[in-house]
Length: 518
Length: 79
Image: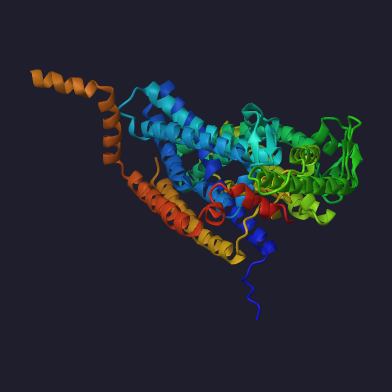
């Protein structure tokens, strides 16, 4: 009987992807709350610095405690992703060369020194350093975490839009030609702005949800009311910024990953003046064209257009999928020939083979490789259909993300209106501390929904670029290690248990701290 | 008197103050003890158990030292 646990390449790819997704999803439960709470606790302490009131000091310490719980639980969960690169994605790790390593190394050093120094001052320094230095340490703790996120997002953005590099056929690695191009790529800048502002939303919702729990329990009312107002301001500002940066991100995606955009919209046949679907059958006229090109009549290619080839707005032609596949195959063959000639040349130099004009032959192959390198990854594609990402998953993930984002703008605006007693007539006989319980529960229920929306954002980013690990350069099938699927499946299950236990521990400690109060 | 001056000098010393910040901080923490315990257990699982037994460096195991490029080429150039 055939053992179904025995590996095939396809199974190894699927399990490796599932494991990476699982690890990244768990990691992303901790990261946005860290970034979001960093802003919240920074504002609370700024209030203390300005007013010198013990109330604000107590409030700042309370939010810093919750930040600490989440920070401690999130520590090192991202390291596992790096383990996976070395074990499950060894071809990718080698191929990507120092481009991925440099930002991650900077991230590690900055995170270690900034966070370990300023976190210590923030928690241990209340009686030891001046108020100003303590406040600076609190903000720098948040800044350290945000800078860490920058480098991680730079690495991710490079996979979506590989720039500042050149492939070396001798070492089989991409070599960085411009650190600035990698670190400041427009794709990385947009990704950073969109991701970090969306993390602040999570912080805002978390803050409001915790405050609503206190109001429901009729505890810590002063802290809850004042914190809620700050949480709602942070959330509203963040939600509006996320919408604005999302617009820029959509334009980047339209420019460098048009297939992702087409999948997000389930757009098969594109054109000018495209509408944005709310759901299938209901659309906002011209909105997709505007989102993608900043022009209500801009051209947006659909999945079929991209596969067949189309003419871009600037008049240049985007080759068809088949042309790209042919050029990819040429690139792979040129690299094979180049490496074979290099090996023969080595044998000739050792006196073990005759001279067959290797230098000239290598130069010929190198020229073919360079000309076709932008399509290298297409050489692995057997069927055009492989180039289409999962449309339904992208379509719905995008709608959940945008839908929740829009809902949260209304939610934060409503919380702020309530917090300022606006409109007056409505709040004459009501108070935020004595609303029916379902109001508070609604706010609390929005927290898991916000997390789902945040994870959906990553689903769009990562599922939408399938089949690529590095856009157009390397597909997942060529990136994965030659491992048995069963071994990846085993570690997947270990992670599932480990992370679930870790999450349960965090939620437990966090709830205890919230119940304890300020 | 001399002793007192020496002591106060030491307490104003930057290195002493940094040491005192950490020493006192660790000594007085309560929630932090639980969090550090969780962090240490987690790091032990990640770096000792997972890294050593489940996440070896694939290329180090399968390619000769210095021959990684040839190994990767053999893997990805035969699609």
